[in-house]
Length: 339
Image 1 (cartoon, rainbow, N blue to C red):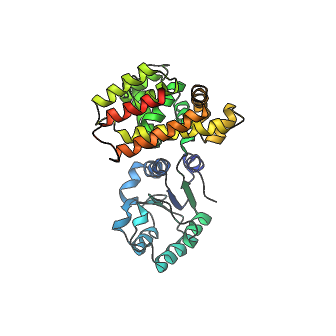
Image 2 (image 1 turned 90 degrees about the vertical axis):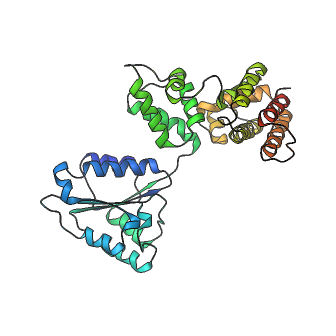
C-alpha cells in the first residue's frame, strides 16, 4: 500500500529506515522533502564520505545500480544510494532490467538504503514496483486540487507557528498558484522578515511577495464581483500601462473559471457554504465570493458575461481583434459586464 509523505517522514524522524524507497508522483514538493531528509539524515557526516552515493538516473545502468546496492558499508551501520530522476535509469523500460530490479527488491541488502526518486509517476501496475511496495516503501505524491491549496497554506503556517489571515491566503492562492514549492518558499521568505507574533496579513504578503495589493488580477475580479465601476477601470488602466507584466490570457482564464462557477451557483438550490464548496470544487474560503456575484448578477447576465469573456479570449488570440489593444479589449468587455 503506497504511503503518504507524512507517514514516511514520521518513521524517518524516529530513525526507522527501510532498505528500499520508491518516491514518485506528479507533486514534486513532497518527493523532494522526503528525499532531502533522507540525504541529510540517513548517515552521520563522518560516515558519508565512503557510504553515501548520489546519482542521476541517466548516468547509471540498472546492473550498475544493483551492484552498488549489494556492496556492504565501510565502517558504518548502513550505506545510502540515492538516485535522482530515476525514471531516466538506463534500461529501466526493458523487461529484463525490471526483472533484475524485482529480484533485488525481493531480497534487498538490509545495510543498504536504496532510494529511487522519480520526477514523474511510476506505473504501479509493474511487478517490480509492486515488489518495492511489498518489501520497502512506495510513496505516491499526488498533485493537490486547487481547492485544497488554502488548507495547505493554513497548515504550513500553523506548523511553523504562524498566524495568517483569510485575505493573505487568498492573495497567495491567486498570485502564486498551486506550486507548493514556490508557496513554501514565499511563506519562508515572509517568515524571515516577520516580527515575533506578527500575523501574515494582506499588507505583509504585498510587501514581501511583491504583489501589488491595489492592482492585480485578484483585485480586478473583486471589483467585478462588487460591480465597482471606478475600481475596475483604475485597475484596467494600470494593466494597460503595464502590458508585459499583466498579459491578457491569465485574466481571461481567471474570469472564465470564476463566472462558470457563478453560473453553477445559480443552478444550485442549496447555497450553504459547505454544499457550494463541494459542488463548485472550491475551498469554503471562497464561497462568499460566488454568493456575492449571484446577488449582483442574475442568471441571464451571467450567461451574457461568459459570452463576452469568450469573445475576449478570441480577440486575445487575434480573432476579430481589429485594431484594439489588449487594454482596450479588456476595457470593452468590462463595460459590457458592468452595464
